[in-house]
Image 1 (cartoon, rainbow, N blue to C red):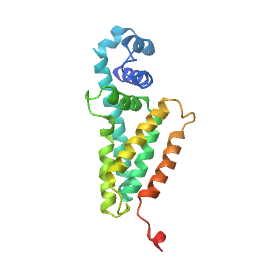
Image 2 (image 1 turned 30 degrees about the vertical axis):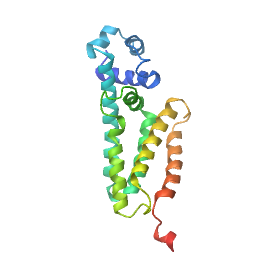
Image 3 (image 1 turned 90 degrees about the horizontal axis):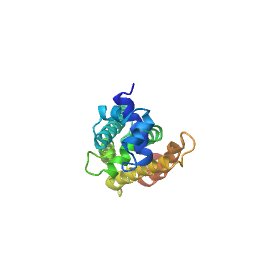
Image 4 (image 1 turned 90 degrees about the vertical axis):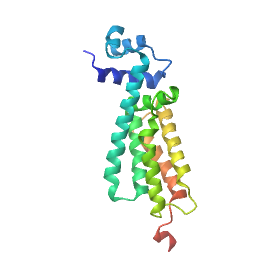
Length: 195
């Protein structure tokens, strides 16, 4: 029996792979192994299903953000941003619905909140806190750093979707290295480095 949750998962894979325009109800019914009537019982239109996929992707992402930020409460703000970047990379790599949400919010601009809205405000706030706590170099503006983080996540989504990540963990490994390079340029020198 096809449940609403199962249909969202199947649709996530199809929207991730083929985009909004390349995914039809007939393609979805074949992938789910059910009739088009069974699909329309749950969702009357493709746009309604796409919105449900986007919402699931955002809520899944938000849960990861809340978990990381709650866990990172004892560390520095910059450490928490680092942990969040890696957690988002793991999520992007593992969850087709999250990748579909990222893709759909670009392809259906204005149809709902963007996928980035589920994590980027927290990154901005953490980077602002990092400035207040002296964790960033004095000449670093946190706004472009947040924008760079958005580009990193978008690039990770595209690379995973494009099949460039053949082994599990590759995306996280790449993000770890890129973030390390970024931190070398933005982080304030430590007392040991100043000595």
